[in-house]
Image 1: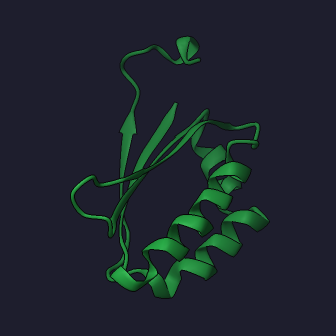
Image 2 (image 1 turned 120 degrees about the vertical axis):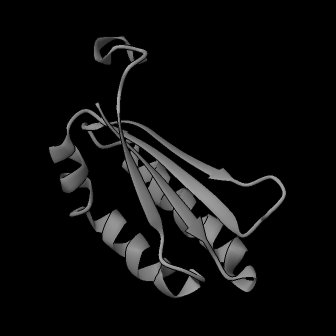
Length: 102
């Protein structure tokens, strides 16, 4: 599994539009064959901070995702909504073992 956490901070006036654009991207992303999970989270006490938790079967599946029309649309739509560049942390899977993801 190839797992990433994407931390995003948006400008307060763009929170609602960011949520709508990201929900659309998430709905389409989870339909991709190489994506196991695509979670979209908001920090409870800071409505301008968000996290994407993306689980791909392989690193190549992440690259394929970044070429999809829905990702490119999302990227371009939200670019000016962010108050700082998004940050990405990549993880390797330990538990559950790769074959045990649901």
